Image (cartoon, rainbow, N blue to C red; front, side, top):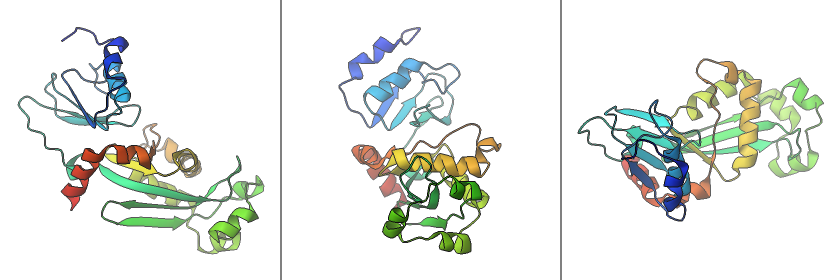
Length: 227
């Protein structure tokens, strides 16, 4: 192997497609890893990176959110969802599509159909910022009165969402990651989870559900492992 992995080393993979990228060297999440491996994974849109070389058995994640599995010497690794990651499908309802919008309901479900759903009691400053739309209310059918009466405090919902969706072995996806990811950040910020010791500065990277469907063999392996 090369002593260094340069970005141009990843170029041959730019027009290739791989569900799992297997490399000798480690990517950047390892202390002796190379950013060039990250680029290779991004170029071929890999859903998992597996590497050896350092003889360390560990699970990691790239800055892009792609999971990584390092293998110990002579370690046998079987691709099983239950031991590597959990897939969650995440969806938000929001007050509107305005820049000042805020989350009013969040739900997530795994590949077994097990999930959670919470109405979110809005903060006063959210309501004061003019982010509520009655046109949106007519679509989702959730009123401010309902939220104030039946909603769960922001701190509790944010803590539960962080516990469920932030672990490194979780793959969270959405059909509108741009919107849902923004509302997730709003929820975590308001609930104080960005400053918590368990957050460790990480953000939720919501995958586009169509991107996840593109990793067919990986998804099937996960579904079979849970099935």
